[in-house]
Amino acid sequence: MIKVVAKCTVKNGQVNKFKECCERLLSETKKEEGNISYDLYQDINEENVLTFLEEWESPEILDIHTKTSHFTEVIPQLSELLEKDMEVNIYEKC
Amino acid sequence: MIKVVAKCTVKNGQVNKFKECCERLLSETKKEEGNISYDLYQDINEENVLTFLEEWESPEILDIHTKTSHFTEVIPQLSELLEKDMEVNIYEKC
Image (cartoon, rainbow over all chains, first blue to last red):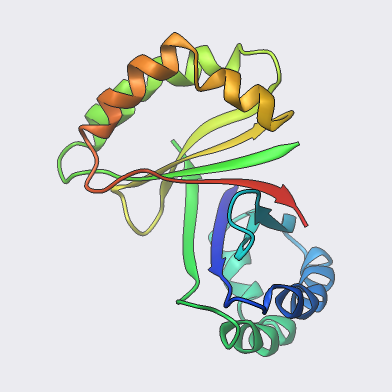
C-alpha cells in the first residue's frame, strides 16, 4: 500500500472554484479498482492549502489512475487555479 | 477527526539516524489517548523526504500531544537532522 500527499496552494479567491473542479475527480477516482481512499482536505490554519490524501494498493495502480480521463482532464483545470505547482509525494511506510 | 502531514527533508547521510530518533516518538505517541494513527513514511522517489502521517480525534488532543515529554524532547533532535524546517499542515476533510 502506498500513500500520496498532493498539496495544492490555491490562488486567493479561487478556493470554492477549486473545490467544485475537484468533485468529478473525487467521485470518479473513488470508483477505480485498487484505490483505497481518496479525499480532499483543507488546512485548518491556511484556507488556501487544499490537499489530496490518497491511499493506493500499489504504485502501478496509481500509474493507471494518472492515465484516466477524469485525471488528465481535471488536473489541468486545477493547475490554472494554483499559486504554485502541486507538491506531490508518494510514500511507503518505514 | 483531523489529519496532520509533517514533512521532513532530512540532510544527506542522516536518514537512518533520523529514523532511529523517531522510534521513541512513534511508540509513545501511539499510546496517547485520542491518537487514531501516527506513522512515519518515506517518499519512494526522494529517500530523504520522511513524513509523519497522523490522525487525531481533535485539534485539542493534538495540542496536548505537542506538550508531551516525548514530543518536546525528540522534535529538537529531529530538527538538527533536517535540511529545512519541518513543513506541518493540519487538515480537516472538505
